[in-house]
Image 1 (cartoon, rainbow, N blue to C red):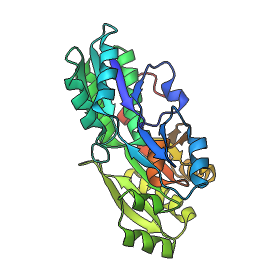
Image 2 (cartoon, rainbow, N blue to C red):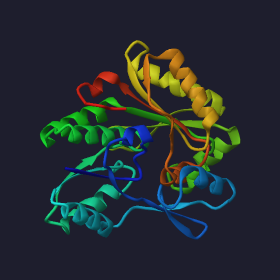
Image 3 (cartoon, rainbow, N blue to C red):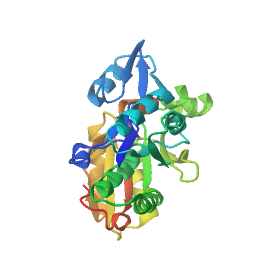
Image 4 (cartoon, one colour):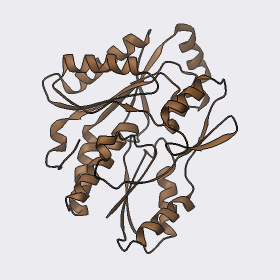
Length: 291
């Protein structure tokens, strides 16, 4: 069985080790030039370009034909089964394009997973599926395990600026203007019913907002349960290290390496983002060789 995902899934090198994960790129345009996220441009270069311009990037999902080509290529290997795992349908039309693409490739046997999330949390489901396939698990065992991880995992992040969310239509102009005037930093999560963004408050400084991320995780999971935790950032290593210090102080945590937010996701948030992905470690019981 093959795994196909998209550039909305953030995975660090240790999570990919030993796995074959295929991806259809997500695309964005900045100052008239189009890039495939993670292929034509890497996070460090992207955020450097973003900081040097007043232009806003625009993003586009893959076309059904891109998915059809990928499914056709995978089916031609002789293994017709594909597990297609994608960014939340509440945030992107990517999985809908994947479904349309699969209709053009009847020789492929495609199963879809809507992660209802993005970034590291999406990557956790992709990684788990990869380890399970590697261990020979059948599909009827893989899917319930992925659902368990989906329901157990929480993602929260904060931003340096609201300009990019406003431009992308994620918040209203008035909300953005108010936030800029007061220099408020939003705390944003991803809800589990529709996989859409949900506001969890605002803080008056980025430092305080990062502290609030750790507090929200404590409110959600307590401080005694062992957690799997990954900190992510968009060109903000200092903020990431602040959050890691708070996590190590407050939680019994299995910490994954810090990850960069993919350019196609950073296009909607801008530089400065700091985020956390967390779940009880026992949600991953039985899954072999996870990072």
